[in-house]
Image (cartoon, rainbow over all chains, first blue to last red; front, side, top):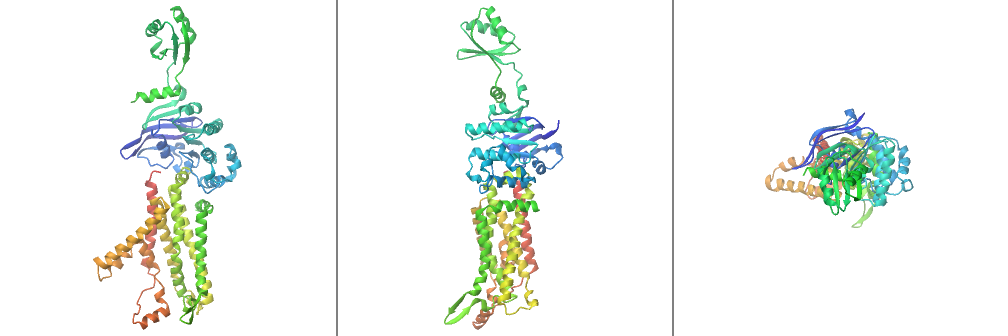
Length: 299
Length: 278
C-alpha cells in the first residue's frame, strides 16, 4: 500500500521541554487514523512539524514516499489545525478563492465544497460574521478544495456545541466514506472510536501504541457480576484459570478474563456451583478504558 | 510570480482600510498640483508658488520626488499592517499549511513592496511631467531629461523604506507596535547622530560619514531637501550673507547603501520567518 506520510524519530524541543520524543509512525493510503493523547501530549506539535509551520529539532518526515518537497506535498493535503484561520474581512467564497490560488487549483469546486458543508447560502457573508461552528465547517470546505490525498484535522470539534459536533462528525464520515485518507487528532476518545480504523496514542511526546483500533487491547473483555452468594463467587473466580483477576466495585464484581469465555457457559458453570447470579453482563473495554490503561501504566 | 501577485492582490483588494489609505495616498500626489494654483497676498505683493520656479525642469524632479516621499508613511501603514495582520489573523500559518512556502510568502510581500514603489514612481513621473509642461520656463527635451536620476532615487528610496516596514511587520507582529518601533528607530538614529556630532566627534564630519550608513538616514540622504536650491531663497540668503554651499546630487554609493539595506531587510524577514515556530 502507498505511504502518504512517514515519520522517523521525530523530536521537537521547546527549550528544556521535549514536546515530541523520537516519534515514528506511518500513514498509509485509504485508512482513517486517529492521533490520541491528552492535552499537551504533542499531537498538535507533531502535526505542526509535518505541515511546515513548526521547525523540528531532529528526525525527519517524508510525504508521499519523499518524491516532493514539503510545500509542494502540502498542496495535495487538506489540513485544519486548531481554530479556523481566515481573513475576517473577506467573504466565505473570497477566502476559498484565495486558498485555491495558493494551492494552484481552479476555483470551480468552491460551490460544490460549500454545499458539502452546508454553507452555500452563506457564501457571500463575511467570515467575521460566522459562528464558530460555521467557521470550522468553512475550514473543512477549504481543506477539501483540492480533493486532497489526505485530510488532516486537529481537534475539529473543539469548542463546538453538540449540534456543531454532530454536523462536523457527519461531514467527516461522509468524507471517509469516499475513501479519503483522514488523520484526526483528538483528545476525545469516542470521537476517535467512532471514526477511526487506526490509532496512534501519544503521551508526553512518546508513542504508546500504533495500530488498529480493534487490536489495541488483546483482552477478552470482562464480566460484571452480582449475586447473593458473593463469597462463593469470589472463591470460585480466584480459583478459575479463565479469569485473570477480579475487583469489587460498589455491589458488583468485575471479573477480567484471561481466556475466551461466553456469558452462557459462565452462567451454567456458576449455577452448577450453586451460585445464582442476579446480574450478568459481558463487556469489552471501551477505548476510553483501554486508553486509560495504556496511559496510566506508564506513570 | 504572477500567482504570488494574484494571491497578494486578492488579500489587499477586499481590505477596506488598505484600500482607503492607498487611494488617499495617490490623491495626495495630485495635491502637489494644487500648490500651483495657490496664490496669496504677501505684503501687498501677489505671490504664486508656481511662479517661483519650483515647477521648472529639471528642478521639478528634485522638488516633487522630495515632497512626494513625505507621503510614503501612508503606504508604510498599509505594508506594516499587511504583514502584521497575517500574524494576528493567524492566516500566515494557514497559508503555509495550504502549500505556500516561506520563501514564496516573503516573495509575495516583496512583490507588493515593489509594486507600491513602482506605482508611486510612475504616478509621480506623470504628475511631474504634466506640471512641468504646464508651468516650466524651459521645455527643451535636453533640459527635461536632465536630473532624471531623482526618479530612480525615489524608487530605490521607497523600496528600501517599504522593505524596512515589511521587516518590522514580521519582527514585531503587531501593526501599531511596528509603527511605534519605526518611530523609535528614527529617534534612535537621530540621537546617535547627535551624540556623534556634538559629543564624540565634535567639529569633524565623522558623524555624517557614519550616519550615512544608518538605514533611515541613508534613505533620507538619497534626496536632500530642495528648498535651499530655489532661486529666491538663494538670493535671499546671499543678501543676508549666508550663501549655501550644498551638494544636491545623488551619488552611486548612496544608492548602493539603500539597495544593500533592502536586501538585508528582505533576507532578515525570511530568516526570521524560517526560524520561528508558528
